[in-house]
Image (cartoon, helix red, strand yellow):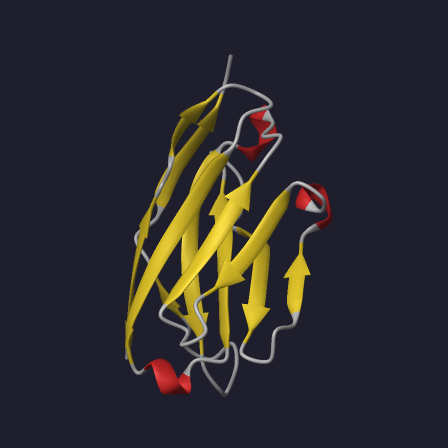
Length: 118
């Protein structure tokens, strides 16, 4: 089992930046994917970005060029650097960890709120 805890959320004006952090503990050796989802009010949870143990990264189109995901080499932390934030980025951001068989039982953090508003 894996435990995750997010930090770094907050309120920022459009065009601003935030850096989200997620600490990961537990069965780190089993983790293959670390990533971030978000859920805006009234919307379904969506994948924002993920990174794999062999350094493959994926981003949702809406954040490409603005967000950067990175991780600790030991899979003990994952980060999301968010720049040029837009109001539509407002959501609760959740970090997650996934181990083979992928998609069967990912572990989740409790989420951190990001509000982008003038």
